[in-house]
Length: 261
Length: 298
Image (cartoon, rainbow over all chains, first blue to last red; front, side, top):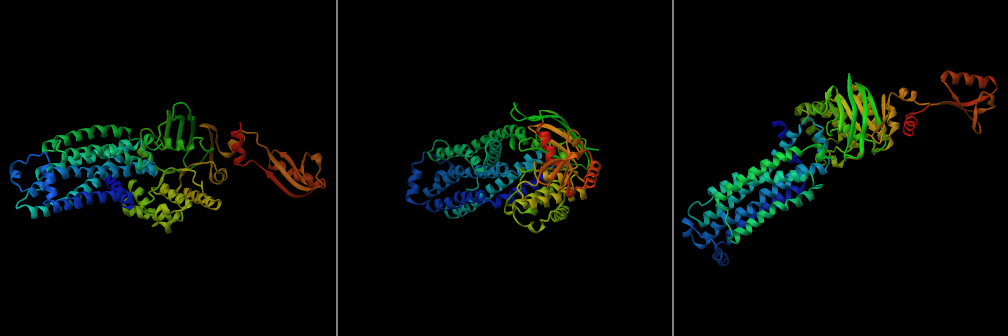
């Protein structure tokens, strides 16, 4: 099983790297959200417009954050509430793109039938594709997190005298919530791959997953609610449970007769 | 040993129309079986059922004694399949594709490399091993598909329309390669095609199918024996004695139905003895096409 996972994951990665339509969004979106946007924000943190925006936010700075200056408060809010919401787009986008290529792309390219003629069980094939896709999607997410961290550490160096990042919240975010969301994106795409005839059609269904993320971002910026560490822990657990239930149903329907013909 | 055993196989996709209806036959090891029928007859469905990709609605299928519904993985180890709908990864090269499928069959990288070299040379495509499959011509894609089918030393080959889309020269070449490779590797071949001319060149056993129903099964002579097929002696000449029972087809051409080759030889002797001049003599026997249409139009 282990060899099968490696063989199929390596092949999927090779195919992804050959297709610009697949790897380009996975390159551009992280660069935008984890590099460009934070750099612009942190440079503008001390500006008059930024302070004005901050003052209009219905957010209570507590503890040590209450004593921060406006620029520090701006950065603190962005790191702990604004950017996590935006960052959520990355695991969902990458997982759905990779699963789209891995499952729907095989069906579209008529290579799924070829795979079914090999001595690999349906369960092995499903697990291999899911595992391979998860590894790739999480790698992109983690590299994006690393890129973002470099920018934040640099901003931290200029604006703060001590470390405020990464907080426990970010660790929960990266090591608990993001894996749960990646699995959700993957399994969601597997379920819809049976219905979607093309990669593009499958990607349109991704909007169903991105929509809640956009609502979270709006909610955070408008001050309607804030993603606390506890909320992330509970949400992550709920998503893992949903992932398990959907995966059980998905594996039952992962049959050649349903997928290929 | 029986390579393939189908017993009362019925398959319907929509629950109303049977794509295969009560199909039963057995094929011995080493046979080159031609499963012949028009498009939509049910040939590809039969291949998919034999390989466990589709479940029949009723009936039993065994391949080398393995129940297909229970031992699908064992069957995939011994079967090499080439269908028109099982494609390659077009962004990967020929050798990368074969390496991937070879590794899934349990070969190590070294074993796979040797095997890839062997099969690609067998099908004369080794020079294109580093070219992306998406850049291959139709003929090359057929050849790489054959390479994949042969790659893991299968005991039985399922070839679905291996010569379709090829020009006559290329089709003949592929046919020859299949025949040679099958003989060298001592395989059982299950060949699906509607190109009877090519099937006749290599098959030892035939099954005729149309609209999901078997029309006939057996060797060429067995199938011939079930029909009133007539052998005709056709001669072109002068002064042919009509009293000998010849029918004058056109100027200088005469036909007569004969029972056997010996009967034909005796008749030719009689024509010459009666003063006739023979410029050309030919025995017209049924070919596979004649036989197939005789079964189809029953």
